View 1 (cartoon, one colour):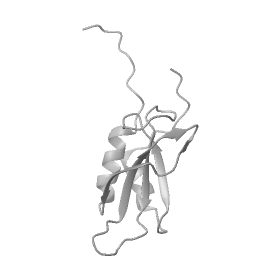
View 2 (cartoon, one colour):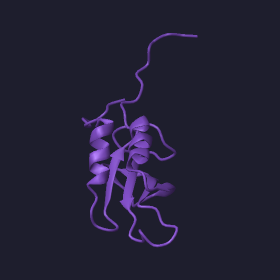
View 3 (cartoon, one colour):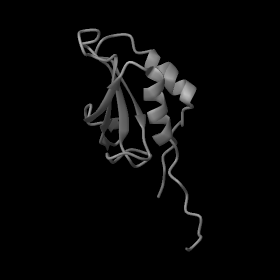
Length: 110
């Protein structure tokens, strides 16, 4: 498997980018190596974070997290909604747990 060069962001960098969303409906995405989606350089799609255009209306959270299939280098839309949150750290933590290089085979047999 050949992995294209992908910058792996720290949790702090992800947090900064999520908190940098300013316009309602604005999105940012991060490639994933673990998710229900597929495609992209890390193999498992992308996390797409949207600044909720309906926030702060009643019962609306600030951020919406989706997972999307990646075709080439871009997500094919927002994808499937996973959850929403007012906590940017919660969003960044979820992404960071899955935004990493896939585990390399160890060659060990069990």
